[in-house]
Amino acid sequence: MLRLMIIYLVLFATIVLCMGSNKIDGETNIAPWVYEIKSRCCKEHRSLERCLPGIDDNPDKNGKCWIYCVQECKRGGFCKRFGKKHICHCCCSVS
Image (spheres, rainbow, N blue to C red):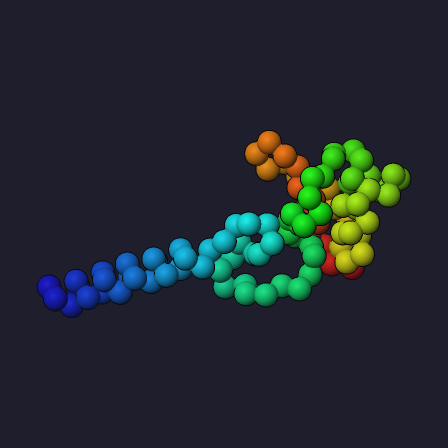
């Protein structure tokens, strides 16, 4: 009985510790086991501030999101909706 209680306690502590490392803020990766990805691809970039769909993600209009993302990602980027605003998201492909 004591052994089972210790196992449950260890599992609970592990789950709690893993929850603390799981951030979804657009700048870091969702997976807690990926600590550092230096690529711009597959991420949201809040540092570019507000993204206007059809303007900032348009390659013909030299949109800021498109220009920023296409430097490292083959497919460029687009304005992804988060709640009531759009944020620049670079597509998941490395050039």
